[in-house]
Amino acid sequence: DAAEKGTPVTLPVTAEAGGLPVTVTLPKDAGPVAVEIPAENLTPGTAAVIVHEDGTEELVRASVNGEKGVILKIEGSATVKMIDNTKTFPDVPPGSLSEPYITWAASRGLFLGTEEGFEPGADMTRGMLATVLYRLDGSSDVGENSFGDVPEGMWFTDAVAWANKAGIAAGTGEGFEPNAPVTREQTAVMLYRYANFLGLDTGSRASLDGFPDGGLCENWAKDAMSWAVSAGLFPDSGDGALDPGGITTRAEAAEMIYRLAEIIVKQG
Image (cartoon, rainbow, N blue to C red; front, side):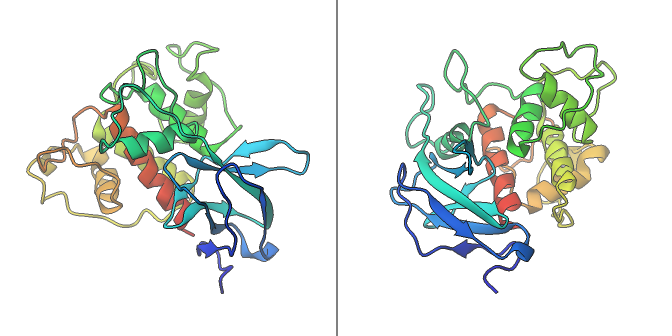
């Protein structure tokens, strides 16, 4: 059945970037269904927008590109339009390996630029990662901020409170340390916990023994790292190493979040 939960459905329509909205109607008992809406001139910056009955519009952050269009989950019915929401940054060279992931993440509003551009090689921090996941989730269930080093009214305050309440990120013993760089294994743990929070299947595992430094992974991160490798979330470190204790860069985080979004959208 084309409307089976989690099964991608390609609609017989063409929605050009910036074109007219398309109304999608699915069986109400099908649950959330992954729908691929074809789009001409598809790029990583092509984004889907839900047009509500009152005329307000909502950018769909948890959406990814398929072969012919943008894949997003729809439950029941929705009116969707495609837009070209491409964001460019002076420090992200066109054609670079990280450009598609950065463009995708920025077009969904998951990452914002800095005064310097995107800063793809800059350290990803704990506060940044919590914020990106909070934006991806679209949650308004924030929770209480219980960390003394997370001031009220900061750009990461609500995200940290949400991540802590959802069990995605806890304190370090020194507070939350929102400005501390996040390592690759810490990133894997937060993504793993978020996937579990969503109820996704996180049972797959890959052996870490094939990496020259796989044994350096901390015990508390091994399950998450094994899952992340199995799920294809980890960008190549460049030398075949896993580099569990290395700092995740902003560009690497954009790629990891993209691959996680693929799982979210395509998994039932």
